[in-house]
Amino acid sequence: MKSDTLELIQILPSFMRQDKTVRGLCRAADTILSRLSKECMKLDIYNNLQLLKEEDLDYIAKINNIFWYDGSDSYQTKVDVIHNANIVFSHLGTSSAVLDVISDILQDESKMKEWFEYKGIPYHFIIELFERVTSTKELKILNERIVKVKNVRSQMDGYINNFSASGMVVQCIGLTVIPTVEIGMEEPNEI
Image (cartoon, rainbow, N blue to C red; front, top):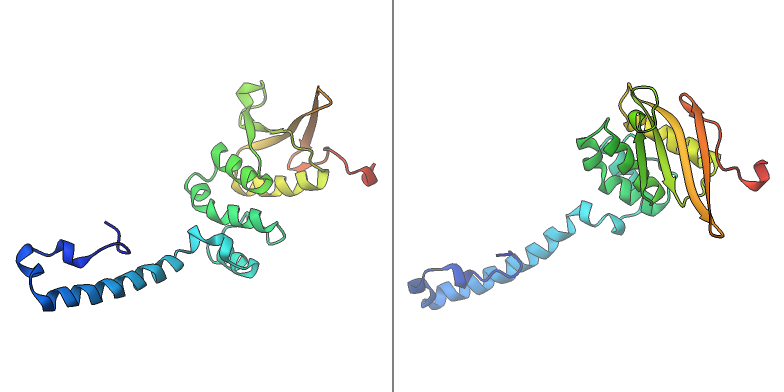
């Protein structure tokens, strides 16, 4: 039973439904409840983030202490970061939190390889990006965000960027000198 489709007359006992005064009061109350329900739906900010201005998104991120939020992101990235912030907060410091933040920022799926999957050093990991050409600048920004949500003891060894071009699979590896990323796909004017 929803408040916007609720008819009070239907929930009354049958002997009260016969009274003209009660029926009139129910109709009047139904009108008021319907309007209130519609107004309350406007107050549901988190399901309507795409209707807000960028300044409002920045303010929401600030008051909710979403410390991996960046005001220079695209509008859709800001909406995604704020919308998924509670999920990230609920498992902060885990690989799942890191992957959620990467997904929000890059608007793309990625995979994390833990140290035991690639015979690395304990508590180290690698981020695997798929079909994503990323510049060194983007990787540095992404790395700053990952450092904010990963476990403190964990260290990122770098990125593996898999993409295919003309039917060939190309694998680019970007390794880090902890904690900054120095190698990645370069912009043509940076070469």
